[in-house]
Length: 355
Image 1 (spheres, rainbow, N blue to C red):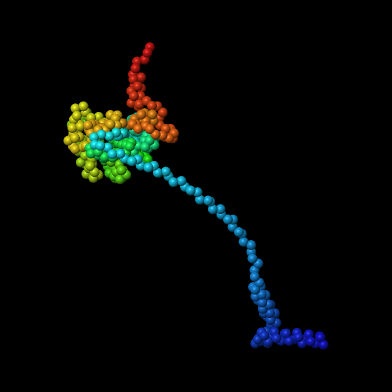
Image 2 (cartoon, rainbow, N blue to C red):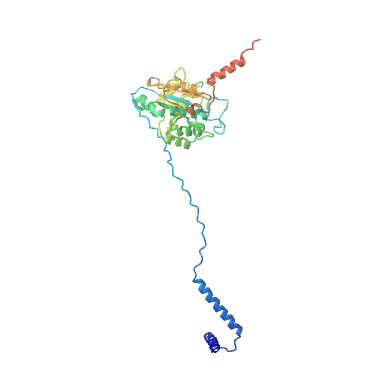
């Protein structure tokens, strides 16, 4: 009986399979049936497999980035501006420095001459500015000095005035950025006809410097030597003032005598006064500026090779602390005055030899 039951069961299954396929053609190749059955079983296996969640693939945990701890950036120390002091009209102590040019190569100034002591090196100039800065000097303009002498007014406790007697490019390329670095300003004593000519300062460069607090005065028109050629006095002193005033829109109040040398007869001083300048510079060593010598005010000429000690000796206010870095700035070590040294060298060459 069990055998008969198995035969009936198998026959029923085959019948159900054939009827479920709804085959229209009774002559279908049995191989096709097996192929269809196999595909059906495979599809079912795929469906079941899809219901099984995939085994998770292990992922690489990134190494945590260490965030650096923020550090406090030190704030620059602000040096307080000194309180300016009121002066009565008539006189004041003002250190005035007189430079011809700040340059050390023809690339910086096409007129550069290495043998000339008129060209102060950049390192020398910066050391001098650093000394003044560390001792608490404050730079002033020509107008500050003129106002105090004529009307009275305020000045800082240690006033210094930087003056540059030329229209050369070294003033813009070297002196200007160095002074700006230490919060100071200068004064250009210009040769009016040289502005905008080859290898000289341009109008735009001068205006840029003036926008940063620089002031202008006159050194002449072309720069003729009126000390030895009086016939050019009117042109040099009289013609430069209106030209500069028209070009830059400011009053030109101060004249600088060529090479700091007025004539003994007073011819140049008389011309300065008649052309309505209010003051003029020579180059005698004094800080005592007075209305009584307003047409021959004192200045210290600074030449190449001036040592730290020699420069320091010029300063009227020497109290204070100067850093070791400033004292050891890249300067020549001899303290002999360059002019005196040159004259001594010539004398030694010309001196007869002892038999």
